[in-house]
Image 1 (cartoon, helix red, strand yellow):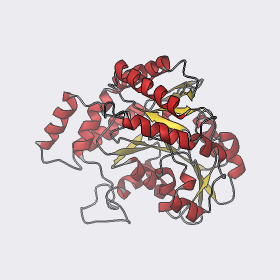
Image 2 (cartoon, one colour; image 1 turned 180 degrees about the horizontal axis):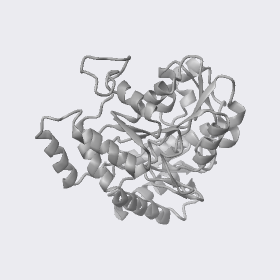
Image 3 (cartoon, one colour; image 1 turned 30 degrees about the horizontal axis):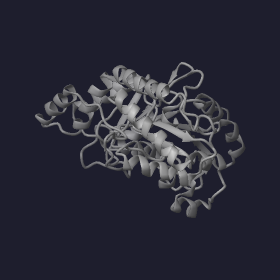
Image 4 (cartoon, one colour; image 1 turned 180 degrees about the vertical axis):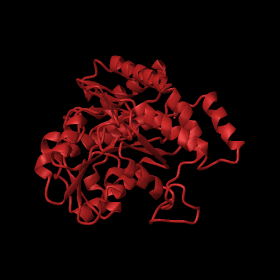
Length: 373
């Protein structure tokens, strides 16, 4: 690829931190785990943090810690990464989808209450692409109806809504640190909460069901190996210490795209909603409504042929074959999600993308749209 879709921003400081851990006997369950958890909880502003090996694992443990299981329903969005549905299915509960707002692509808070029923136990909203618009309203709905709110913040690190940091709105929140995220631990995730009981339960579940300070072969409950190694944590500690620099870099790239594509009327570019400071996870444009999914797919093909990394973001979850079969969903069930998903194009977006790269990508996009018009 001439321009990759994503790329981590790793400096010598991260490399040195990882090497330092590699020279110790504490490659896992060592001091870097607690150091990373404390630093991340302090950065977001929550009491407790439990580091895990992925955002998906974090969501799964939240479902278990809050006692969600067979017979329960969890309201969530069909426009997300598959984890937000999988974590509900993994505990035997049923996802109940609510369509998205056509502007923010987040779950439509105005529709949520109509989907609340006697089996509803939780709401699982997502800050899609890092955009937190409406998340405070979702939490207020959960509070009003005495429901658990687990905030999927895996795409939202560094974003703020009405003065509140992403990750502080739900009863618990999860972040993810895959290499395409705002910061990375290689692989990894973290759970945040102000509830000590939930934190202790998640800490036990991620470590094969061991209670805190229990012996290595003492298992209080069914658990999992969802641990995050000290190697990963060392990388995360340095990345987190650079967070303000990372936010500035990503904002610079976002503003560059905004300028270069300002006159391109055939795509809808992302905008910062009122009251929000968005630290964008990806830069996703949407083709105008006169284009269809077939034309979008052709644009992706042309861009890749020119060496420009790109992707559709996201495919509707309710139309994934196993979800459609299990939940009885079909085409037309969530019209806004389907309309948006059929026209989205994720363009290269990462900290060290240059203006020349942005201009190359934008020129390639214009040419591709010309070809399909």
